[in-house]
Image 1: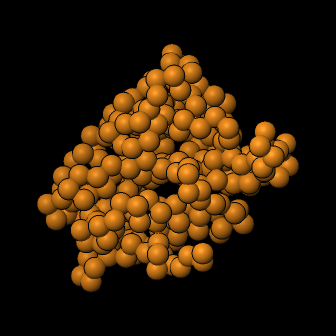
Image 2 (image 1 turned 180 degrees about the vertical axis):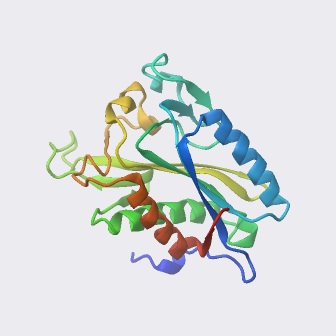
Length: 237
């Protein structure tokens, strides 16, 4: 079935102010990021302006609410943080763009599945601007890239690698956590976990796919893609 732009639209109601767009300098400690999100989400819930916060973290693993302890293969490799977002184990580290998306869905569309699909659509459109075809899968959250140059999977299907992960949480219809897009992280760092509990598929990045891009280049495209799905943004001063 052909999907339409309207299906992925999370444009705000009339009169909603632009989403603040903030880019962090340097590596942000995970605990500090969570504290900031908690503070911002509380303010947004009281009527404050929405926010997208772009960060990079030092190497770490996070465990979502569905995490299986057996998927933490190397528990002593990097710090591990339990988090209230949905999903399983994920890796964050330098070279990976993390976008913490803090929106009030009461001002938009109170539909969690539509919100997740909209975040996937932002990543897919971002990748499309760099001539990379990202795809969603009904049985696997995130964005995937086909790898025809790799051996077929045991079931005879084409190999696929994950290039972006999603994990969200809502509080009174205000979203937090968000997505992570692999630009140029150390892909070996993913070997310390079973990413998102899925062992049959690999992990890739834009640089791994042969695109010598910088995170700043990706940020420009990410913002443009976000605006087509979620609406206007403004620099957060």
